[in-house]
Amino acid sequence: MTYIPVLILLLVGLAVGLGALLLTTLLGAGIPNARKNRPFECGMPSFGSAHHRFSVRFYLVAILFLLFDVEGVFFYPWAVVYRKYLSVNSFILVEMGLFVGILLIGYFYVLKKGALEWE
Image 1 (cartoon, rainbow, N blue to C red):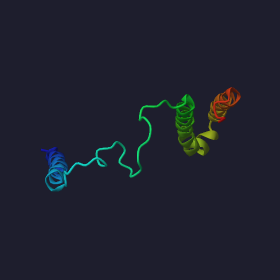
Image 2 (cartoon, rainbow, N blue to C red; image 1 turned 30 degrees about the horizontal axis):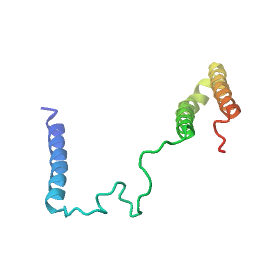
Image 3 (cartoon, one colour; image 1 turned 90 degrees about the vertical axis):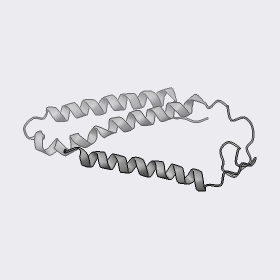
Image 4 (tube, rainbow, N blue to C red; image 1 turned 180 degrees about the horizontal axis):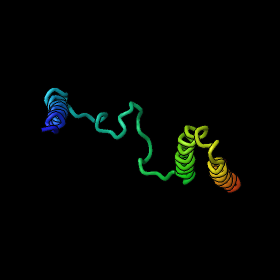
């Protein structure tokens, strides 16, 4: 009995989604032409092949951004409880210092390898 509102919400969401798909299929103009059928409908004429290789540096920078961004998320909980637990035990300060040290070692390693330099 307690799951009936959830079931009703699920059914309403499903009906709205299917209704939107049905309305766009029925009311939308389905007249194909050469310009609409081109890939990446951005209004600019396409040139070259859509299958070309990107430099691995793009992926490397993206992965490094995610790595340092996710590690940066760990600072927030530490900052929230810092004042509360620092008076009891200074181990939390040493632990965060080690964490920041490991981050800095990784950052300097990436800089030394030249992963963030563009030529």
